[in-house]
Amino acid sequence: MAKKIKDIKKTTKQEFELFSEKQKKLANILKEHRKAKGLSLRDVASHTFSEFDHSAIAHIENGDRRLSFQFYFEYCHLLQIDPTLTYIKTFSI
Image 1 (spheres, rainbow, N blue to C red):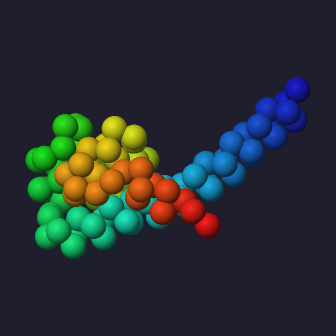
Image 2 (image 1 turned 180 degrees about the horizontal axis):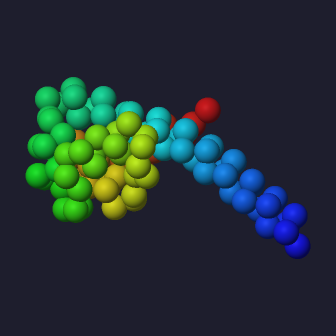
């Protein structure tokens, strides 16, 4: 039984690492769009509905914190970019 739990944890960790790399790529695209629009992290924090301050947003953009769907859609709305199209472009091979 313990071996099965260990295998599950290993698989979950591998899946998380894979997701993390994709999520970092998506967060980096948002960061690039934010900078292109001339917005600071404080601007984003003050214009989103999420309970994130500028430092939490920096952690998201750097891939140190998970990007929630709610925040992703709010961020895309603020940047005036299509969240679906951005997501598809990010994850297409």
